[in-house]
Length: 72
Image (tube, rainbow, N blue to C red; front, side, top):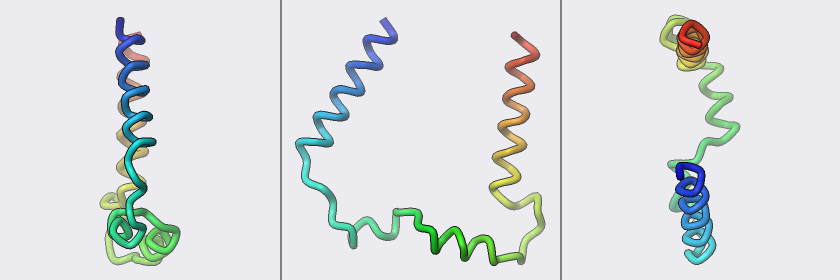
């Protein structure tokens, strides 16, 4: 049943996406991640390493994997 719901939701999202017009690139520019934003973020070294979201995401992924493997 879960697989059927996943497929149904995917089909509904695909149809809705294909039926609606594409958004104006200028209208979504503030919400789109670009290579320039990434480069600026890498150059900004005014914060300690533990406040960097990349280290936080790696740590969170590690904790999640350890928890999953522990209960497996």
